[in-house]
Length: 365
Image (cartoon, rainbow, N blue to C red; front, side, top):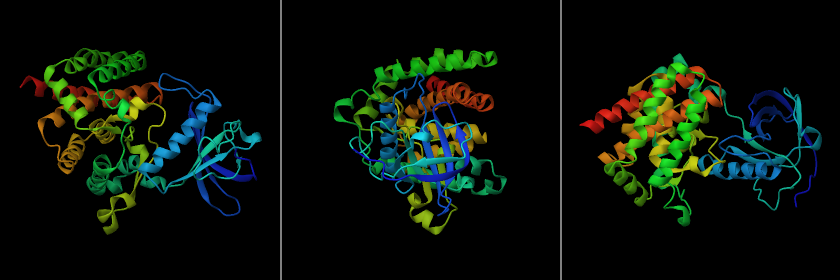
């Protein structure tokens, strides 16, 4: 069992607070080392539970393992929180942690300790949502998105991100997709209740989207995705606030992975990350569409990705069209319900309605 050897204090410059976690931006007063710490709270909602210490430790281990697979040089390890700092006040000034475990596992964690996940701090101005809103970067956006699309297509086609064989026939099956869609629509219904002006879009999604899962041609397309091993352990949350991109350089063009940092992979619910690679891509596409208002920019990501992965046929485009609608609806529900961001939620929902119109027009031809 891991024993707390010594105490190290970090001064906290800023925090990001949510119901489920607190993010601490800190530095060491002597070494001036900048660091980011994520500490989970006792929390439960319809997606997951982290009420017990055991659950929180499991999520921290899972987060460290999978985030390192997508971005290997950012995540430092886990560290126990000193007893006096277990319950952090709203605006903490300092935090005390024990020795850092770079490669922890169940056996090396102290079962009585809270742990923080430690990350290197990245420059905020290089986060994709900030690049998207920076007028000085507008001329570079197409190049940034092309670079990232190359990176994610490489991950989807070459990384050994597989699902256990015993589960392979479930994730991505029509039955699983039906269940997941129903859960997502229920969340959207709850989230949208106070926003009566958006009910017409919700009603259309609830009526039309499940029908595609019942049509023989779409069932055949989804079956091909399953049999083609396109259902993998993906990132699951490809949106701009989780993506950092360095300034474009020759090195970036030659080795995109050295210029892209992809953080906060889903680590709490397998149904959100054991998904079709096209579902993973869809969240990126609708998020860029939502934040920029540019369908041309969003569609350029689609075209580039499908060319790079050699999935330019009709089945892939129809499957992706379905996932674009589903992911836009999910983005709206999360923005309304969990983030309390009405403006972003409305934008996601507008994208969902637009993509639904596109799919219905395509299906009617």
